[in-house]
Length: 228
Ligand code: ADP
Ligand code: AMP
Image (cartoon, rainbow, N blue to C red; front, side, top):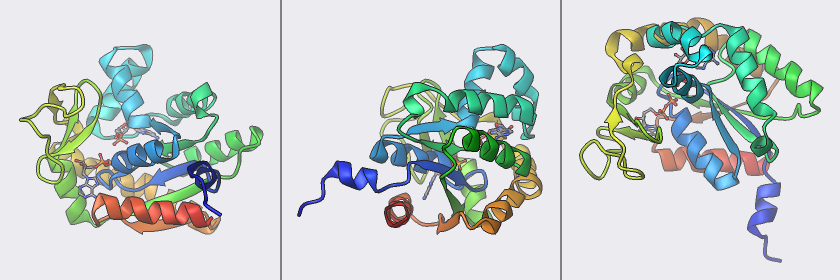
């Protein structure tokens, strides 16, 4: 009997946390997965950058942390994420990209989803070497208008520094400059690596070699989700 696309979708776990260092490809993979599986893509970095651009209260509070590569205080980020998780478009499921970033946030997420009766989620860890991370972050460019992610050599836009989707201008994130990259990798090692251990302990973690081509990484994630 033929298996319909809807059946395949039903067989996926639809709540996904994407973990990995800056530059591992979380945003890139989250976008593909969200299109493939019709899930909400929740990127805490994108939400914070938008708040900074719009100079909202959240943006004013978060600005100096984001610009220096430090973590924004847990209370602000957790409130922002739990609110977002209650929105209508998240009912079908979500992909969290950039959250949780420390063990306290992981605990908050578990508590929130537990209370909502939605505790079952998958954690995919994008395992990447430091050399690749530095190359990816250094060449990353973002569309000012729609936030699409490009890379100067790995995924260049078709036309000079303008977005293929909306012709918006591409820019380099200020925190992708060399000094801030170093700081962000230190913050990752200190704060976020323990989250990998947190999820390994409770056997949720599935690791993918994310040094590979993005199509291969996506295929491995879909195979894993299908088999769960
Ligand atoms: P993250 O969200 O984890 O910080 P991104 O998805 O923004 O990472 O990816 C970082 C950079 O690396 C981007 O410029 C993106 O185009 C590029 N990139 C992402 N995945 C791959 C891959 N598998 N191979 C090559 N380049 C990639
Ligand atoms: P990202 O786009 O995921 O690389 O995040 C960019 C920046 O936003 C980080 O360097 C932090 O300053 C901030 N940020 C994103 N997510 C979180 C989070 N879960 N907790 C604290 N700060 C965050």
